[in-house]
Amino acid sequence: MVNRMRATRSNRNNRRSHHALDAARVSKCPKCAAPHKSHSICMNCGTYNGRVIIDLSAKVASKVKKAEAKKKQAAK
Image (cartoon, rainbow, N blue to C red):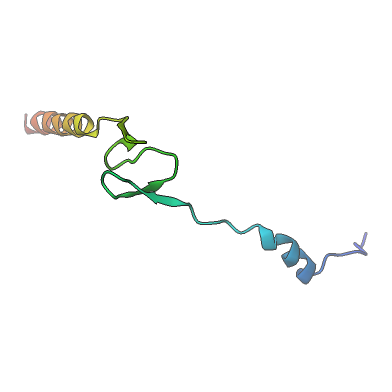
């Protein structure tokens, strides 16, 4: 069967003209001035709305400790 009312390329593309994605909105952290998404935690310093939400210094310390343990295990 033949599609009699075929949508032309022009009509198809006009319909899809609103499908483009916008770039993410980025804010600047007031504490460290790193870019981050609006209404979300700054992953550079771990603050949101002036409060520390994630203690990133403890997270970094645990990563270092884990890496050292792994290094010791490999040396054995």
